[in-house]
Each structure stands twice: as structure tokens, then as C-alpha cells.
Length: 237
Image (cartoon, rainbow, N blue to C red):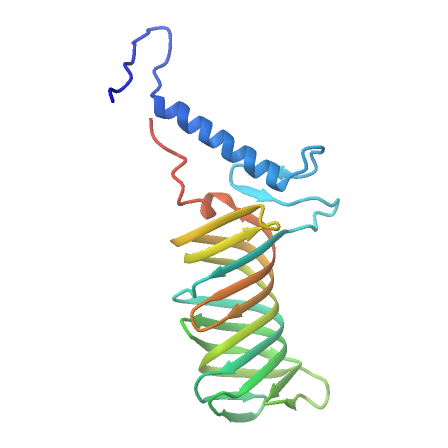
């Protein structure tokens, strides 16, 4: 098929056909995003070129609802707090709770209540965990400070069959992911194939299996520029 002929006009700017097609695509994309997230009857919610910001209430407390099932990042640093950490071990491991050193057998389980600290997720293992907790349960046996103070907990590394983090807060999640993301009751659905995944100010649950990461919670905002980096909207003309 022959390319359209461009007629030179000294009184008009020259644009390629691709420019107009891109404008139509961008317009449709922004319209769909706007109608998915915002009530067209009011203007209490805002959108900018970089962010979708779900501000509905006067105090700005409403957040975007997030659900995702992704692969596990090569390395993911968590520096945060969580209401509960739950682990089912794949292999034997050693942990320290307060002044106690505890050897856990394969398939042992333990729960950490009201955790505050740091750890690293890498593949099927969690490493360099250091923090405090209000109580720790090892195979159902409670370990806590008699005075009611928090106790320290740490371990070098453990491999897991299953791990769950309830009501965890994460400042950001950022890696090249495979999987699917649902936003605001599936109004926006995105599939990732080793592509940039970027989420900010996440609050909710996080579950880890041997080869998956599941999220279900809320996010303060989506950084559209980073989340949609895989779409080449900024073409040169």
C-alpha cells in the first residue's frame, strides 16, 4: 500500500499521519482511565500526566483498590510494619526471639504479631530479617516479653513453602514483573510480561508461594509514567 503523499504548505505545519493516530490513541486512553476512576458528575478527583490520584473524600483518605498475582522478584527489600507475619517453612532454619535461639524443623510454622522492621525477599527465601514484635508463636507456643514490651526477632535466612503478611505497608513495589494487576474492582486490568511494575504507598495483604506473589489491598496512587512505561506514548515525529 502506497504511503500518503504529504503536500507542502508554507502556511501550515507539517505533521505525519502517525501524529494524528497517536493523538487519537492517547485521547481514548485518557478517556477510559478517567471514566474508570472518576465520577464525571463532580470534580473532587484529580488526574495529572504522571499520576492517577484517588481523592474522593474531603480528607483525601480514599485509595485505589489493588489486586495482583505476579511472579516473585529477584530481590525485594521490605522496610515496614505489618500486623502479622505467617511462615510455613520448607527447610529447617534458626531464628532468634529475644534472648532465645530457636532451631525450627522442616515444615515448622511460626507467626509474628505486630512486626516492625526489615527483611529481604529473594526467590523462595526470606533473609536478613531484623525487627521487633509484640508476640511470636512457634508451632503454636507463645513467646513474648512478660512486661508487655516488644521483643526482638531476627534470622539470617529461611526458605518457605508459604508466607503471608497481613496489613503490611510498603512505600513502593518496583520490579520487572510477570503477571496481572486489577485496579478498582477490575475496571483497569493490566498484564505484565517481564515489564515494569510500579506501585506506591501500598497497604494490605501480601502472600508469597514458591513462585508467586499476591497482593490485595489499597494504594495511594499509581505512578502512570512508570507503570505504563511499556507503552510508547511519547513518540518522535
